[in-house]
Length: 119
Image (cartoon, rainbow, N blue to C red; front, side):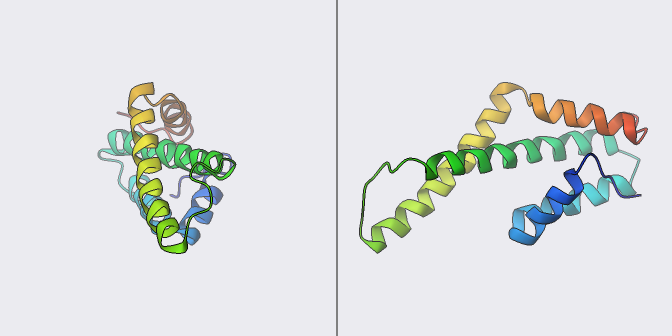
C-alpha cells in the first residue's frame, strides 16, 4: 500500500527527482506504508522531516528576494551559497522543533485517519 494524501505523494515525487533528500524522504514514506508494526512513530518522524523540508524551501525562496551581501566575486558567492544553504536547513529544523511541528502533526493525523494506522 502506498501512502498518498492530497497531492503530497506527487510533491514528494518531484522532491525525489530534484534532490537526494526528497528521495530519502519518499523512501521512508514507502517503508512506513509497507510496515505497520511501528508505523505511527515513523510516520510522525517523516511528517516532521517533510515540514522541515517544506520550511527550508520557503526560506530559500525568501532569501532569493533579498540581496544580503551585494555583488561578490564568484568564489565568495559559492562559499556564501554553501553556508547559506546549511544555515537555511538548520533554521528550518529549529523552526519545526520550536513550533512543535504543527504542520507535521496535522499531516500525521490526516494520514493516520486515511490509512487506519494505529499507534
